[in-house]
Amino acid sequence: MLSCSKCLLPETAEATSFDESGSCSVCRQIEVRDTQIDWDDRYKQLQELVGQYRDKGLYDCILPYSGGKDSVFQLWYVVRKLGLKPLVVRFDHWFYRPLIEENNTRVFKQLGVDVLNFTPNWHVVRELMLESLKRRGDFCWHCHTGIYAHTMQVAIRYETPLLIWGESLAEYQSFYSYDEMEEVDEKRFNRAMNLGITADDMYEFLGGRVAKRDLYPFVYPPRKELMRIKCRSVCLGSYIKWDTKKHVDIIKSELGWKGQEVEGIPPEYDYEKIECFFQGVRDYLKYIKRGMGRTNHLANIDIRNKRMTREQGEALVREFDGKRPPSLDLFLDYLQLTEEQFLGIAIKHEVSPWQFSPNTVEPGRRMPDMDKWNNTQVPWPNHPGVEIGGGKG
Image 1 (cartoon, one colour):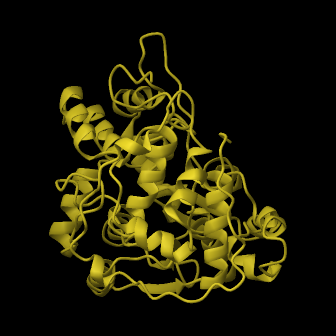
Image 2: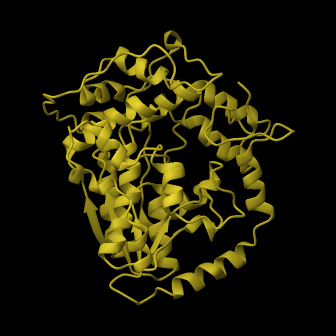
């Protein structure tokens, strides 16, 4: 595969292009971030923006929150630096690791915030996971659509027009560039979050197995309702220069936030995607489909920020990417799939020219807290069944 001449991003990465020198579009965006953006002016714009909403309602803003590094930093920044009163909105996707609850309790108590937690129906979630896995090779549709759509619904219910999200997509992907003021709106939702599948689509795909009203958490609210409250939904990373490692240092020292090891990731990245116990499965799927895993992504960030050489990144990728995560066994049990069925689905979504070789896969390391993951299973009497695919989708 062709890969970037500066970082390790392959040509199979989503929404990526390469220039004449072989540099990828994300590397070019980071150059814009570092050389062309007046971050002092952006910060002034942020102050002007939040000034329009401060002390105007029950809450100054809505802050989506998972308990991962980025949302914890967002919350710290909004409370301690901007002096706002946020409503923290959590969408519980069912797969939070035990440490997250410990971290969250510590963070919420120190910052003194109101928290709204929503957990969707498990029976519905399981149907959505299987359907999105089959159709897109990605079981996280319910998580990504729920986090974005349901949070926007909450903004309407609480008449709170300002939403503050995390980093700009320009930091990691090329759906947007840093010279744009990215809004977290319906266009962005359809472009980058919902896999090209709406809740209405899902209702039709599921063929009556789920009631339409049970899909409401995944429906992006009507534009007229968002216009009624004069909604602004923005990325904090459009206004302050994003630096993940610096932010992690802040939340560890200021809030006592703890990291932990994640499947398929070097131990030194103990801050990356620590929330979900199926993160390893998701990264494994990405490797099957695109030939890149989470370590490739992390090495690219450090290479672009001049913290690592390309050769050092290549060594890490060889060591950690593409391993079979032990959590796959639990995942297969949840969705009542065989590993043959899982691989048959995933390989259908391969992106050319990458070709996955299942016979070369090595086992990954089991995580120390895995025995504490929720492995409570419930019957699925009307499981729709899965045909093992042969061709690529």
